[in-house]
Image 1 (cartoon, rainbow, N blue to C red):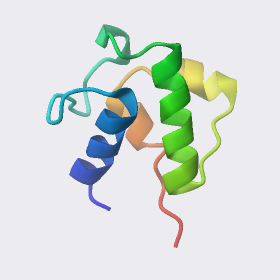
Image 2: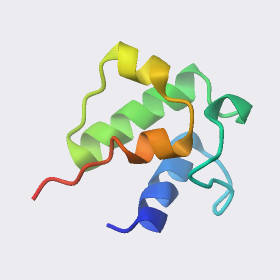
Image 3: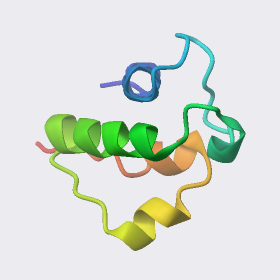
Image 4: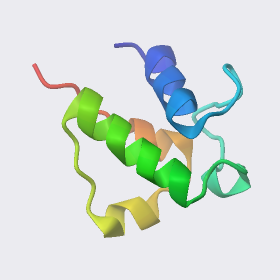
Length: 75
Protein backbone atom coordinates (compact mmCIF):
# COMPACT_ATOMS: atom_id res chain seq x y z
CA UNK A 1 0.00 0.00 0.00
CA UNK A 2 1.47 3.35 -1.01
CA UNK A 3 1.42 6.51 1.14
CA UNK A 4 -1.51 8.04 -0.79
CA UNK A 5 -3.63 4.93 -0.14
CA UNK A 6 -2.73 5.07 3.56
CA UNK A 7 -3.69 8.75 3.76
CA UNK A 8 -6.97 7.86 2.07
CA UNK A 9 -7.65 5.31 4.83
CA UNK A 10 -6.93 7.98 7.45
CA UNK A 11 -9.29 10.40 5.68
CA UNK A 12 -12.03 7.76 5.68
CA UNK A 13 -11.45 6.92 9.34
CA UNK A 14 -11.61 10.59 10.32
CA UNK A 15 -14.47 11.30 7.88
CA UNK A 16 -12.59 14.14 6.17
CA UNK A 17 -12.89 15.22 2.55
CA UNK A 18 -10.71 13.14 0.20
CA UNK A 19 -7.46 14.87 -0.69
CA UNK A 20 -7.45 17.24 2.29
CA UNK A 21 -4.82 15.55 4.46
CA UNK A 22 -1.08 15.78 3.91
CA UNK A 23 1.67 14.16 6.00
CA UNK A 24 2.36 17.46 7.76
CA UNK A 25 -1.32 18.13 8.60
CA UNK A 26 -1.67 18.88 12.31
CA UNK A 27 -4.27 16.62 13.94
CA UNK A 28 -5.28 19.22 16.52
CA UNK A 29 -6.22 21.57 13.65
CA UNK A 30 -8.81 19.06 12.39
CA UNK A 31 -12.39 19.36 13.59
CA UNK A 32 -12.67 15.60 13.05
CA UNK A 33 -9.82 14.86 15.49
CA UNK A 34 -12.10 14.20 18.44
CA UNK A 35 -12.90 11.15 20.55
CA UNK A 36 -14.97 9.58 17.75
CA UNK A 37 -12.17 10.23 15.25
CA UNK A 38 -9.63 8.62 17.56
CA UNK A 39 -11.83 5.53 18.02
CA UNK A 40 -12.33 5.28 14.24
CA UNK A 41 -8.59 5.60 13.69
CA UNK A 42 -7.86 2.90 16.27
CA UNK A 43 -10.37 0.56 14.59
CA UNK A 44 -8.88 1.21 11.14
CA UNK A 45 -5.31 0.58 12.34
CA UNK A 46 -6.38 -2.67 13.97
CA UNK A 47 -8.41 -3.87 10.96
CA UNK A 48 -5.93 -3.02 8.20
CA UNK A 49 -2.56 -3.26 9.96
CA UNK A 50 -3.17 -5.30 13.14
CA UNK A 51 -1.80 -2.33 15.10
CA UNK A 52 -2.98 -1.72 18.65
CA UNK A 53 -1.78 1.60 19.99
CA UNK A 54 -0.99 2.15 23.65
CA UNK A 55 -2.82 5.21 25.04
CA UNK A 56 0.52 7.04 25.41
CA UNK A 57 1.18 6.60 21.68
CA UNK A 58 -2.30 7.87 20.83
CA UNK A 59 -1.75 11.00 22.94
CA UNK A 60 1.60 11.53 21.20
CA UNK A 61 0.08 11.63 17.69
CA UNK A 62 0.45 15.18 16.39
CA UNK A 63 0.51 14.91 12.59
CA UNK A 64 -0.77 12.64 9.84
CA UNK A 65 2.86 11.47 9.42
CA UNK A 66 2.79 10.24 13.01
CA UNK A 67 -0.17 8.05 12.05
CA UNK A 68 1.54 6.91 8.85
CA UNK A 69 4.55 5.83 10.93
CA UNK A 70 2.25 3.43 12.81
CA UNK A 71 0.93 1.85 9.59
CA UNK A 72 3.50 -0.91 9.19
CA UNK A 73 2.27 -3.58 6.83
CA UNK A 74 2.62 -7.19 7.85
CA UNK A 75 4.25 -9.47 5.30
